[in-house]
Image (cartoon, rainbow, N blue to C red; front, side, top):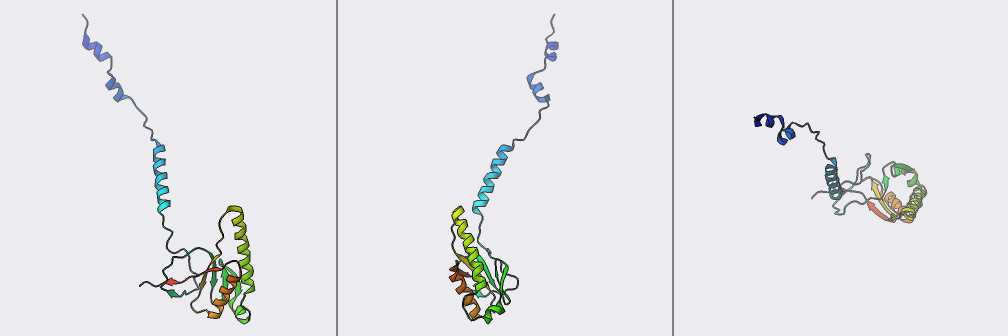
Length: 171
């Protein structure tokens, strides 16, 4: 006689075999990378560039204003009590400028023209438009005559679009 119980125990069922098999589980990174890329693009698109685009020099006390316009990027001209700087590079001593009679500041005009010609070359090579914008940071205590000379020199060089940097008074 044939015993069916022995036959059944000798052949393992598919269900038992499936459970007892050691499977290596591998993590699929492709979908996770897609998700992180989408999140990154979303964050970059929604990132706000408003706020403090210009960092004032440490030795300046900027005047206050009730201005409502947002700051714009441009060439940085700083007028402190001692020096005139362009992009944090010293150009001329203020005491020397105040001794001169002419409105144009020659050393500042030379530096501004050099930056302007470099910007025009960049525009020709890469198509990035040159706006001629300059941001002027002036100490609150500088003489009005000095500020007018700086602005006149900027206007006579490649930078006629001027913005004065001030602190916004909160109402």
